[in-house]
Image 1 (tube, helix red, strand yellow):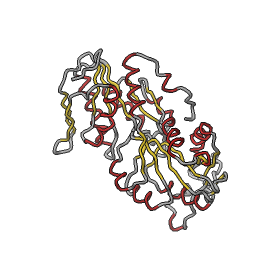
Image 2 (cartoon, helix red, strand yellow):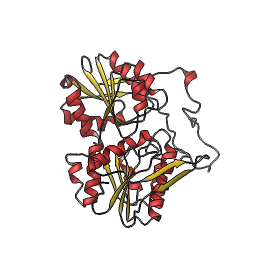
Image 3 (tube, one colour):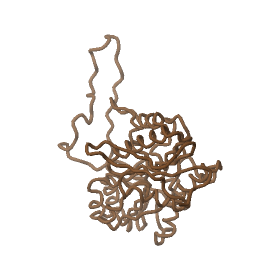
Image 4 (tube, one colour):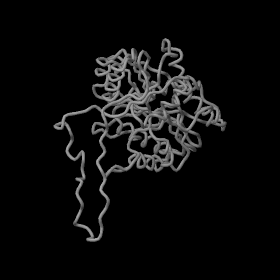
Length: 356
């Protein structure tokens, strides 16, 4: 066995073979073997972890790829971290390329900030550091009480555009909503391309509107203090879809961090086709591609969907040949090597701006 020097081990916390592929690629690049452990589910779906080698006093890296069964993967990670902590591991560093629940990072009505809860759970279990990639909101780093290295996939995706997109100089970078404009602008500036933004939403019949869309009703509340009258707020209403920018006769490249439910991307592709774009690409870091996403992509005007291997999607690729994969194991392996050797991480963030 090729044992890594200076006492560090790399484990995978996944119980499914599909989710260990990224871990195997990372360990191959590091020239080490995965730590010996068994992760499985009991008959009642409880998670059990058996670590088969000593980890006392060592630095441990746990690679956890998040599949569709998000909650099981989280439980596997928590149980493995705690098992290694109680086995007297010195440092336990989580390599979580796609951080789950990252979309639930803001308070909405009577909901909760679940990504903050998850950060607290990981710290309580025993994690001392996290390596992740393209957090949905960079402010999520502030939820953790330990260091977080938020790597970027944009160098790999821009390289794919330059090498694999024919005549990419005739392309235009598209943000599918104004909130994605900063990310799109960063891609456009790096590739020296134009920028377009899609604004608005598809118009629907009144019968399709969800109840409470315009709630609370625009009436003054008279049940409070008799002298208190709050100003009325008009309900938001998005205009019909418009494209700010000329996409006629161009290759349209939509960029985002996550592609999960693809209805918005399909609608964006249709409107871009109507505006004259002759080829449409989707570029995203995390390809969750849930539910009927492969079928919808295959039947849509989208020509190609390019995602990284932070999330396993081999089944979706079999269902839809339009889905392509970019390997990011190199930067994850280099992050592990640098952290272990106490080297600066600045090299991995060279020329990276806040909006990337």
